[in-house]
Image 1 (cartoon, rainbow over the protein chains, first blue to last red):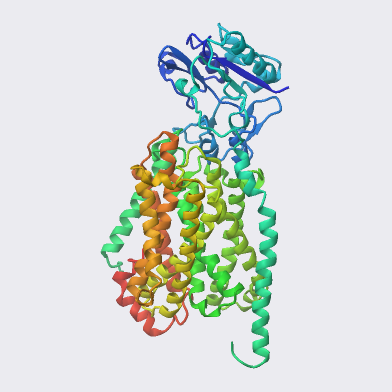
Image 2 (cartoon, rainbow over the protein chains, first blue to last red; image 1 turned 180 degrees about the vertical axis):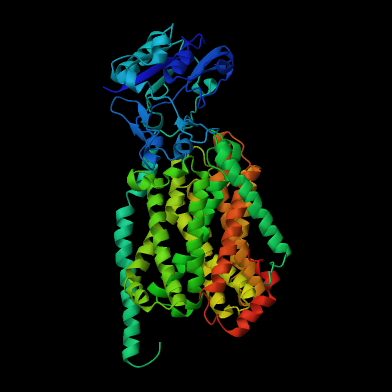
Length: 248
Length: 389
């Protein structure tokens, strides 16, 4: 059963406990200065973003069909059956195509390092595979961030809207965006007002590339026959010309 | 013993300045990382080194496979005199693309990873393989020049035997990765501005690469005729320019249809940076295309050269628009290359011109090259010569 995170913006009080827990899990420094940086980066893999009196959270969406994993030339990024999209820094050659391809602009790079790595949230893969909650969900005091099975969380999100229709914007973000994500959002206001991208296609992005890439065997085989054939014809014409004793 | 210092000319001084700045930029890149050497950021991960060194570098080297196809596969033998320079340009181009890649990769020491760690769903993986294989093919296609110089007949006969499959593989590999450089951007529908984002990107990249390959052949023939004091193969280049005009017309027509079918023509009415950059790009390609339809232009060396340069610039504008400027708004980031990025790119170009000149001087690249008259002319035009570089 694939795992997911449900973030309910209406329950979030902006305490940033998720940020601290995340930093601790990754062994990253965390202090007031870093807490005030309201954007994800190589040293801050999740963040709370303030939008007036509303809060929002940024973290890797761990897409169901991730663009990053599809474009990675060395397969350093993998979509696991459990849900997280994991990263193997030992394979990564630093082409940064994952960063370019990600529709949520999540992957961050260690720009200042001589031997840099890409950094992103992997939904606490090793914790979840041991049956534990993600560090952020465990730390959240209000239940704004909840970790569990994706189907159950999606159903719960719909139920919360149905129970308190006047408190929620009537959509769950992440159910179908770019084919669905492992992070689902609930909000009191339209999602673009809490900084989420709403211009995303509903179809998984890797399809856009695959539609062309799958033609590759056809192009190669047709091309070989075509070029070989043309060469054979033009060359034959020359042979005949030579035999007939006239210069072409 | 007489020590002869090379004569200092303006071009040589500029060349030296560029190479020195490139050297210092290399130091910055190695010791201060991508952060110290570039203006790239999390929101804007690809800059000049991808947009120019890779996208333009590979495209500008497309003359190699275009001419191989024309001369050997379509057996239009009269183009043979310009085949070798085109193959040399392509080979140098690809080697320099790899050099550019070494600067751009976060971990250049892992350049070989895609050959061992596979992900067939990745366009980048396909490009990596094609570029590796095609650089090898170009090396083999260039070898006869070396064998001829050294007078090695047996290896020459051996390489001649595999030349046909080699050429076919070369053309196929080029077709695949020239188009795939466009496919790289299929995954960013929300980032790339709709004047450029199109499901036809692979086709557009492929056709324009062939066009710029022909334009670059005219460009380099013109320059090497000056640098090496040879006569310009004008009738050849003029008939090639005719093909170029038709090809560019087809390309521009596809671009127009593409905009119409995606309902993107209306965007041209918006007063945005993208509109003007698009207009510039199209003008740089459309104006020479129209001009080349006239025999008067095609048979005038200067006008022909001018048209070829415009098409090359239009091509570069297109690749920079797709790779850099067209991505800015969608990424919510502003990017302008740091001096170190520019210095590295200029150095790579300068090195390319210089190596081309040296190889052209010492290897049988141009037919009827080794006459006494030609080498005298080389001396004479020394000042001009680095003008190529």
